[in-house]
Image (cartoon, rainbow, N blue to C red; front, side):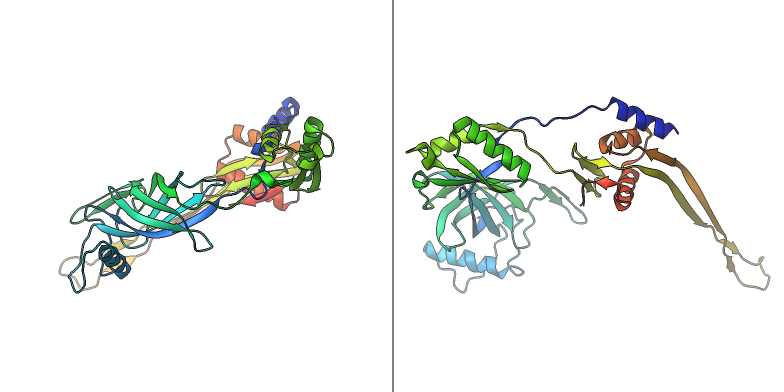
Length: 366
């Protein structure tokens, strides 16, 4: 009854919620304006004995020998066993409209059995795109995000010292051919497709810049015809469009993360009339065996006598509580919180309500 009264009180106090206006630049991307992934294979040198063991990573020895030979050092038939070198994969994203000479951030990750990249320096590494062409060259000191220490009988690791970053560690050598100034038909692609939001974006653009400029294509695409305004710079036009504000519409969705016990829900989530009952059963089994042995100098043998104690207890929970139809899920969760329901139990209750068909939202469990 206490749970029911609290829920009804919350429902009475709850008011309508409205979405805040959001800029179009935060809702949509320009079709065709995107980054390109780059990848390369290189070496990190200067490690303090935490590099690859070359016996387990022969590819490290091969690339190191090739690098030294290109620098004029002959290492053929030499006992080459350094411990301060690690083979790494270098990844980066070439941003749109990046010009030759500009710098981009890169990520570095060990692929051998190196223990740490702390204090290492990445040697000049070409970065290739999906077409096989080199678009950037990376080099610099690695900033690793962890720490590792070891002794004769124990070791400790904090974070992931085998990965790191190099801010502005790559220089763009080749540009992606893309003449944005000659485009007359542009398209906005919504990050979260929704027919209502797309219609609002179309109406806002036409209301601000001129009727007929924007046309709704589907739930995630709005076409922009710049010829309606005559001869206009597409970049300047996009700069005007992306600052127009729109109230987005989102689908009702409940997201649950089992690992952390996190529950995230949208404001439009509703539940129908449903009754909820929750309680926990705890089963405890204790084994306390007793050893029985004969007296000194007496005949007999030692016997282990089992002693088992089993009990079942039920922790206090909520009894049947009826929730009125079309209630806000946020109010229900607030009521469960006020009663001290644990997050794990709350997740189980929401899953049961969804299984009963009373939760009207997309239910996502991670």
